[in-house]
Picture 1: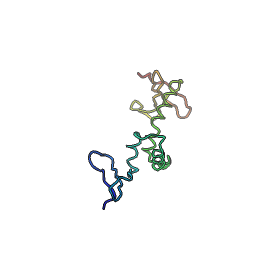
Picture 2: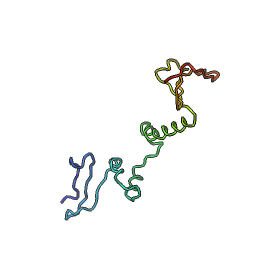
Picture 3: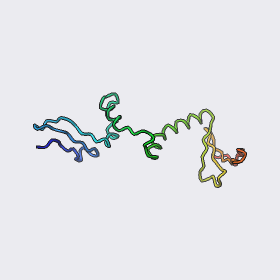
Picture 4: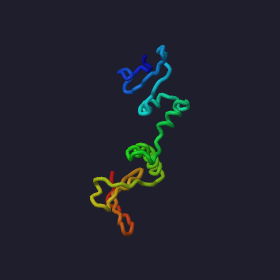
Length: 132
């Protein structure tokens, strides 16, 4: 007598689901691997008890995540904040291949970019070139 039916067949890939059946082979439940939850959750009502349980079971505190996972979680939010700051007149500073020495940076504003030199001792910023 078997107590489960393995649905790890092409029709159900890439999910590995098992249906638990009783002695009469009547379905009694479904086993969902926690690792498959990210693939399933978009199809489940977020207000359902099942969704809430799975979210709780698969929750990983931020400080326990890998650097890659943290980056993926924060990336969209960082882009939103950068965009909002640009719209308010602020700028984003970064280095790229134009920055051929440690004192060179690109200041990116909403409507233009500048290659600047920053004096580490005084903090004085000198515009080297307007970009774009």
